[in-house]
Picture 1 (tube, rainbow, N blue to C red):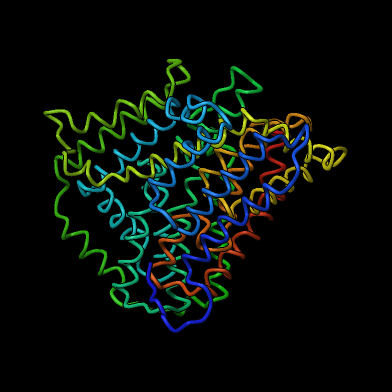
Picture 2 (tube, one colour):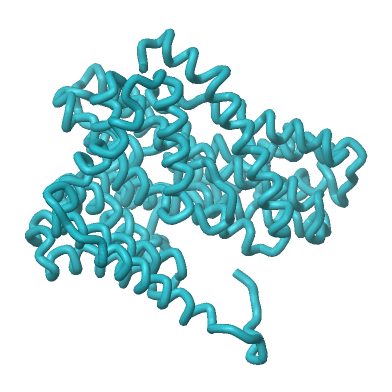
Length: 467
């Protein structure tokens, strides 16, 4: 991210402000008297969780430090025993995501991802508007083959496209960057995302022990997000007059970049074959009965086996290991919250408020709560910490607990400010999407999401017996 420090500016330094907020919020929570429902362990859980979330939101400590601090504080404070606080590390979700990150890193390093990106844009490109939709299609494809771990390569690709077009911060660059956000981040909420799937599956299994979520469940129920992105891009191209927007290079630029890659290498072909094997494994889990986690825990590492040798030790060093620790801590929020009665606490508040209300009203309440939580929590923290409470409330309202979890994932993409999701923050940090344009475009997208949910997804979920 860019920015300069103005030593003459008045007010508190950003870091000090962040520390004050991070400390003040837990203190205010601690002042609230505990009772039979709002117990002391639950109060400490809120204080510790919000303290560490603020540390992450204000970037006050390295991500690895914040990630380790969360379960450590749960343990030291006596909220839960160490085996509960660190229990998320025994969850296969952590190792599923590590395998997905390994796969994405190796495919990126061997050049396969950028080849797919340039090939797709060449086929879709030629005009400014077609390039926008080409970027969106690229994001879907890259996230499909990396199991929703392509947001970084997608954002970097979009930044390169903007630079090649010689775009400055403007409506044109804002449109390209919005397409990049839709391409890099939104697919995580409608494609098979191993992290989200495991979190939702675990939450629902608290109430339906034999519940399983397959590779097609997220696309089946959340495909409406594709429609949301397409409608948003279409409306903005009309509002911004994209038909008249010109850019340098055009299709010739992407033709040139694709030719520079040369023929597909043996490593790229092997990498593509490994992706195919993993997809076949995931598709057949309903027939074999094997957990989806096993595929991610084994198949990506075939890339390092002698004779295949697509990956190497240098590639391993480029894997973002701190994010693994952070994801494990986010999973721990749900585990610890469940142990101290967080789900029952939320249900005791929400159920009386929503009792007697229509199912649509309950769904919209879930969306509103998710959008509000998104301002303060990362998507993994949201899904990890709120899946069980959402499922609990839904069950008491006579709804499917799986539907409530799907709504929570849908809400992860109801974004208004860059800090809410790492991918959006990366895109905004390139400096090509002014804050005014970011808020304007994302607010429109959020409005479209609500309309699509009410008019399309909710009726279809009813027909599919999802609600």
